[in-house]
Structures are given as structure tokens and as C-alpha cells.
Length: 268
Length: 234
Image (cartoon, rainbow over all chains, first blue to last red; front, side):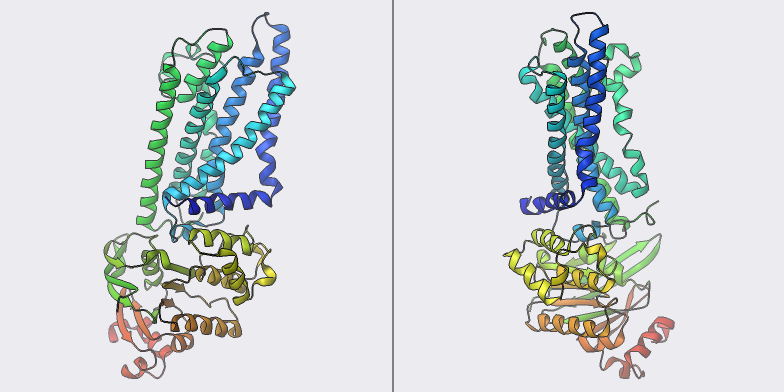
């Protein structure tokens, strides 16, 4: 792994951001709108619901973490799409840049963009709506880590999908978080779901994070660290699988000549 | 002398048909080799395999110093949403260029791109984009340079300048070039040796200045037309 080459891939994204308000604004705009919308809603719910239950801590905290997860995933896919749109694969992959350096560069870009989004959300949620993460204590770090790793994994898998099916399949990528959300139990306990959906939930790392969060927000002490540990191991397994899928897709693309002539017209 | 590129029995099939059919050739240091042939002859497929973006079906490609390989092709423009300087910086980092700022400044000067240093590459004319692609190809002073129709979008004056620059570069003796072109005058001027490719096979090989006469043709262009129309007659 050559870190200068990895840095070059990330620097390309910085150059694109630097010169483009339309790329920078979405990093803050949608998460800010989301925080404001859910912030006011949870504040209202707090006034009409039974005393003692904080919607701000449970719902707004969950929205914040879910938005962070989506930002991480989109950080990878957006950086990848920039190369799709610029038809840059031939220039990159005919150079000494390796597949892993390229993916590493996408991940570094995603870290930077999702950190900016997270900072904006934290500022608004904490100072605008009084959301406090003090109750979660040191568990916040593993929560964020699990969602980050799973977001990276899904971003890489989504990129592999677009590499395999072509630029027109980009629309398949955007709804992925929305498809996962009902199973992840972002806003409600997993026990609310029918049995078959609960089975799917057990395979999704975010479900463990949100269950654990809700338990703590309800004043329960986590019985053990095993749910977060399970989520972490699951997220790492997804990441390993995503890297392998991307590698196989890339190999297929070099075998068929897709990388050399990648465009909307050349892929089915 | 160690070859810069050795290709042995290279083959690639698409849908059961051979795009490249067991070709073998070499490029030595200080040599410009022309890869000629009609459209669909297998030139770009061969170059893609050498670049590593297309997996060969069979055969071997030996490049002793792969990190010092570079290329320029009309179908691989640099990202249009980055400026000229940004593009050269990014690819300079990827190709591990030392003293990158000085190298970028020198290339901007050499390829007459100084006034466009802060212009987005997508806003350049096709000729300027071609010059930018060539500047990128020269970033790492490649030992093996692959040029797929490098002067296709350039006016005759700039083409001549570019040819002279590449010839000078190769004349230093450390580098070799594989050059495809449909401009036979250009090929005669720059290439030390040419390979005529048709239907994925090398039909002829030799000095572009003596090859037409050896095959009863007046010019290289006549020979090219003969190869393209009636490859079996040669």
C-alpha cells in the first residue's frame, strides 16, 4: 500500500469539493434539514407524551446516527461516481495505483465528508435541541465505529454494483439505506417486527446499535458488551465481503474489457 | 540489451472471435515502434492488455519497469472537472514523481499549457486536451510510453512539435515507445520499426521507409491500404 497514491485519490475529491458549492452544500444541507425536522418533531412529542420518556434522546439521537451512517456510505459512492462521470477508470487503473489504494482513497474521502456532516448534526442537535450523549458515555465510540464500518462496506458494495452494471444502475444505490432502515429498527424496537423481519435484523449491525441506544435512553444499563461486539464483528465481516466483491467485480471488468471502455453506452 | 517490453503469444477473444491472435513483439530502449492497422485490427486491445486494464486470454507481457510506464490516448481524457495543474499534480503523485512542483511547471512550459494552468480540463479544446494527456504521459519520464493516436486532434504545426519532442526524449536512449497512428507520414517520420496488424495478427514487420518497396508498393499508405483491404494477398 502506497499512501502517497491513496492520498492522491483523496486529494482529487478535495479539489472537486474546493471548487464546487454544489458538492459542498449537500454535506451539510440535508443533515441540517433532517435535524431541524426531527428536532422540532421530538420536541413536540415530548410535550404531548407521558413524562419521563425523552423522544429527543431516543428518536433524535437515532436520526443523527442513521444520517451519519448514510453520509459514510454516500461518501464512498459519491467519490466513486466522480470517477464514473469523469470516465477516469482507464487513467487510474492503467497507472501504478492499486485497487486497494483506490478504495483506501475513497474511504479517506468519506471520512472527511462524513465527519463534516456529523459535526454539523452534533452542533444543531446539542445546541438547538438539547440532545445529550452523556448517557451513552464511552459507548458512543463503538456505536459510531460500527455504523462507520458498515457504511463503508455498503458504499464499496454499491460501487461494485455500479461497476458491474454500469452508470445507469446508479439509481439502485440511493435507496439502499431506505431499504435497510425498516429492518435496522432505527425508530422502534426490533421486537415490533414480525419474526421473519427480526431474523434479517439480526444480520444487520445497525440493529444492535439502535437496540442498545434505546435501552440506555430508557435508563437500562447494558447487561453486557456483547451486542456491540456482535455488531462490530458483523460490520467487519460485511467490510471483508464488500472488498472481496469489489475485487471480483474489478477482475471481471478487466477480463471483459469493461474498465478500458467504461461508459453508459458500453455496459448493459 | 534488456527489452523495455516483450510480448509473447498474446491473445484475446471477445465472444469467441479473436481480437488479438497470438502476437509477439518487443520494444527496445531508444526505439519507437509503430503499431499499424485498420480499425478493429486489435491495436487498442493490445495496448489495453499492455496497460493492464484488459486481461489477456493467453500469452505473456513482460515489462521490467512497470512503474515507469505511461500512456496517452484520445479515448482517455483527463478528468474535465479538475484544472490542468490539479490533474498533473494528482497523476504526478500516483506516478511517484519526485520534485513534483518543478516537474509540473516544466511540463506546462513544454506543452504550452502555462496559460491554462488554472483552467478546467473539460474547457480546453480537443488539441489542448491532447497536449494535457501527453504532459501527463511524460510526468514520470516513462521507460515505456504507449501512445494511441497521440496527434489525432493536433494541428500540423503542433503535431510536428510534439513528434520532435518525443523523438528527442527517446533519443536519450533509456525509453521506448509503442505508437499507433493512421497518419502514415507521421509513422515514416518517427518510427524505427512498424508492425502491421490485421484481424489480430501481425502480418508485416520492418522499417517503415523500406517496407513499401519490399512489398511492391510506392508508399507506406499504399501498403496500409493493401493490408487493410486484402491482408491475405501479402
